[in-house]
Structure formats: C-alpha cells, structure tokens
Image (cartoon, rainbow, N blue to C red; front, side, top):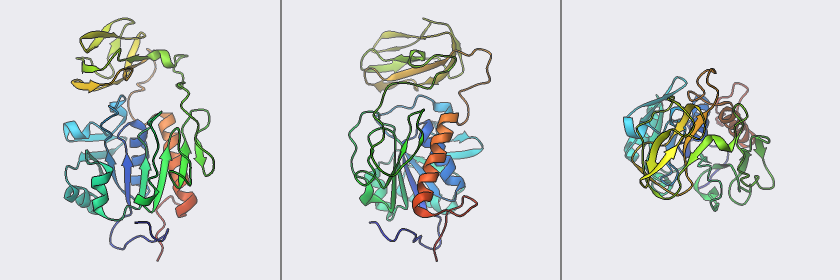
Length: 285
C-alpha cells in the first residue's frame, strides 16, 4: 500500500487517519486539519475517553462536537468518510476500525494516538505512506516510521530507539498528580449523574461502578469524567479532579501537554514529508 513518499493524488486533500478519540488524539487531529489534511478519528472501543470536553469523541454520541473552533461530526459509513475528505469542512469521528478504513484505499498518514500505556504494539507501516506512533513502546523502523515521545518531561520526535515505557506519573495540577484520579475498583457498569466542570468535595460520591460507590479523590472541579452507562475494566480512570478552585477552567480546549504532543506530531510529519514554511502540506508535482 505504501508508495512514493511525496506523491499525493490530485483532486483531494491528503488523508490522515488518527487512531483514538481522546484529548491527545483530538489535539493531533486539530493540528493536522489546519495543516491541510482531511482527518478522521477512529474510536478505540477499549479506551473510554476521560477528558471528553477536551476531545472530539462526543460527536459519536451527540452528533456534533467542537474543539477550539473546529467542528467534528460522526461518520458511520465509508461513504460518509470519503465525503468528509472531499468537503473538508470539519474533522470526522467514526466507530469504524482501521481494518474497515483500509477499504478507503491509500492512507497518506496514519497516527496511532490511542495512548495505550501497556498494550502490545504492532507494525502499522504497511497500512499508510507515513505512520507515526504516540506514547510508550513505539520503535521507529519496527512499528512506525517515526514516533513521538509523550512523557511530560521528554515530549518530542523520536527517529531512533524506543519511546519510554509508561511510568504512571501525571503532570501535576496544584501539586496533585496520580492522586487526582478516581479509578474503577473492578470491572462493571459505570453510572454517574455528575458532569464535567462540576465542583466536588473529597470523598463525595460521584457515581457507581459494578454497584460500588466511586468517590471524588480531592476537592475541586471535575476535569474528566467517563460517559455514563459504559462497561469499564478494573482500574480504569473514571474521573479526574482539578484541585485549583479559583483557576480558569482546565477542562475546556486543548491542554498545554496535548498541544505540545500535537506540535511534535506535526514536526514528525515534517521530518519525512517536508512541509512548507507556512505549515501547509507540501504537495509534490
């Protein structure tokens, strides 16, 4: 399926498939769209999205989502995906998996942004002209063409070696790292009436999982919350609390870390594709 690196078929924008609909995948999709790509995000059914108001995932449920001025709409069929590539009025979000999206034909750029911390990585290079892997465990030349290190202390492009393994540390908010997350005690149905942005107090019940109460780990505002009514696995992050009571809302828009990862992803593409100085997709003639 791979072809000449700089060849882009005439009459359409280059096609980017982003695996994942989380906040990082959505920030990457946002950057790629504004760089000239037609973009579709493919939901990872095994990874419920936590920071939904910072992501495009809700488009699959509500029919529309918007992130920093860019709209997202659901695409249920390959025909709708193709129409979205042609019109390029928004990014598309789909439940179609990579195997189904391969029926589109040539994929110009494939980005694995599922951020699976400990999942086994596979070689996705045969499926697109250029492949980029985000997060732990990607080795350029083995799994992808180029990788992006996403550990907060080392975000950047990686052409050699392997991205760092998951270390479990989170970028602190008011000094709170891992302790600001509420997790599922076991597998089961997650039920909540809370909403992202709600103010909560420490130990307040915010939902139940498998009929066991899930409480707020800190006092603050809900920055992330898995959608109600989803079957989840044990130890999954169900909620995130920002303890900064008087700070501007941190649960809206693209976060600083996601923005840095998105910039690094575009830099990774530039290292292979050679974008022009204005950040637009370079088309060879």
